[in-house]
Amino acid sequence: MTPMTDPGGLRTITIEGNSSGPHLLITAGVHGDEFTSIAAVRTLAQTVTSSELTGRLTLVPIANRAAVLRGERTAEDGLDLARVCPGIPEGSITERTAAALSALIRSADAYIDLHTGSSTMSVMPLVGYTLHRDDTVLNRQRQMALNFNLPAVWGTSPDLEGRTLSVARDAGIPAIYAEFLGAGVLSDQGVEAYVDGCRNVMGLLGMVDREQPECRIGYVFEDERPGSGHMQVQNPSPATGFFRAVVELGDRVRPGDRIGRVVNIDDDTVTDIVCEVEGIVIVIWTFPVIHEGDSAFVILEIPENPTPPEED
Image 1 (cartoon, rainbow, N blue to C red):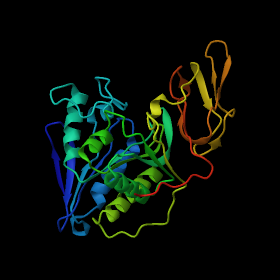
Image 2: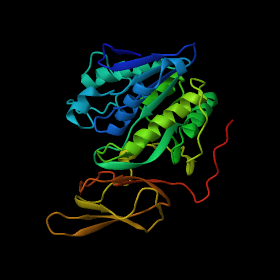
Image 3: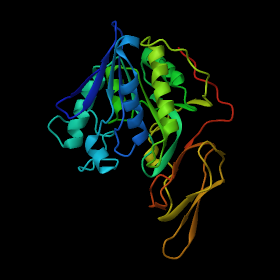
Image 4: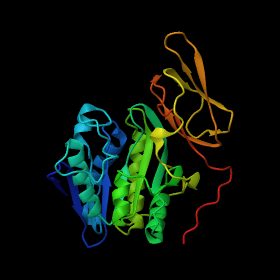
């Protein structure tokens, strides 16, 4: 195991296997308030051994050190690392980090980016990927996502820019991301699921001997609509005030269902949040105060009996 820090400030841990093979990159802490992902990658660094490994495993436990030190989504420049890739080598702290991270992504044969919800929201455990226009890359991403083995698998628009996965997309590198709860809490269950998921993908890639565990997947859905996958703009709150959800992650909702309410902080006026689509609740705002326009929910618009995507 070789720890090192590159010029962009990324601390990487490289584990070289006992024979040549794929190069897998796994990152965490792209946002500074996503603690479960960081703990999972640290656990991988402590448990994956050279003797069991074929190929090379590069781990980045904390991609956005400046944001983690603040305990916030972004560093002091206020830029979102997952919106400014491929970055600017001579730019602000986040732009420099994005440039270093993007270079690292381009060096890999496959990529996993671990996230959670922010300190103000919780996300149903899921794995996502872009609907890459290269069928070979797309099918490999589907395989990786299915093997990761979280309850939901979500393919979304390939056209969102500034992301780590958009860097991988442009380089033709199969890449997936994962989400597991959040709300500023480090989930031991999430750490275990992430470590297992990463090892499952390593098994798929032929990097370790791994028997795929029993399937835990409940939903597989691909959404080609422009902007699909951009969680922060969906179902904005209609008002500012004290927020309470009346549904839970994983609930199926339908048009007309009351899914939350906002109470005005001055006059106790209640504004209901009413569902407009049918689907599964995969993101819920968890902080007690919400501002008008903040994304209160994300609904995965999946039918009752979806047809799984077919490999080409």
